[in-house]
Image 1 (cartoon, rainbow, N blue to C red):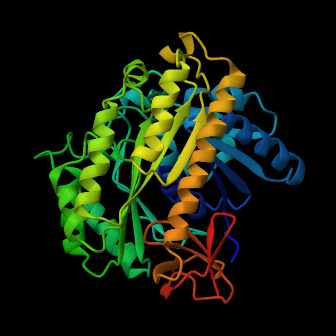
Image 2 (image 1 turned 30 degrees about the vertical axis):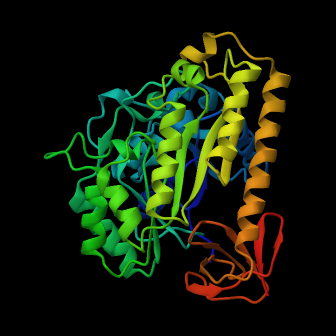
Length: 416
């Protein structure tokens, strides 16, 4: 069924959660003539895609009011307010407030963007469902206290702040009661969860409380993790809790120590190797995803080779590779650049390595029964390891079914 409020989401899983909060607020305000664009600022390409989408929608649906929000709107509101297609620009904190979306939009300021670093709390928002998704996303944390030299996101999200354990439990209970079988816990820097809360509960402690409070939830998954901030309770869950999915996504970025230091990352190469080794010792079937930046400023061929070798050394399966894109206002943008063609070539090498790794992993699953969460179309799904599955016979959306893949096509497992 088509949603009555159109929301187009770019970027991370946290944006997916926040898009549903905005959809609820806009629906309650009767804004059926609006299109909400929830932007991402991770790369210049993400911002370009958002602008391109706005121009297209302006041509195709000139009767709709286009409202732009998200990280790109927070860090550079003017690039959107200067577009004639845009009716309003709303900052990242204000987009989640009910009063921002109340009736009387014509009288509201066209641009409302506050100082994101003045925000010290993240209010809980109970989301009843996710349009187009059979997995649910729960925001447990927002913002980041770290300042990686390439990253603009703290300026779009502010400093780290956490949801209370009670709020997270309430949200997960509601989503489980609504029939969701998998919940993805998400945030900007989720392994920093809890340091701002009374008693400083860790991410792992919070997860154990949630899973004990909602024992009927079949699947729990985490978004991107910092490899040096895993607490002991997360390791316990990986080893002992079958409902905790054996798929960990690492915020890696590079596999060379000098580049990691110039990025101001918290880990070194050896930490990543140790992380993967310990995870496999506790859960032998665990698979890893990783974000990698190719061609970071000053990266030599030898430095790149260290990153390239780490893919196979740690047996990384799902790679998200980005050629370095300088973000104005970040320290990395002022560092000596690697030639653009070299960046592109290194990214291609990493993607090719990732494709080989993924194919090898998918081959290992041939003929072995997998638990597959069926997506909305009934003809696709994801295994417990987050491998994509394509079905020849439709299944009920949202169900978890046992299926044995028989072949591979376009990086997907095929089920007869």
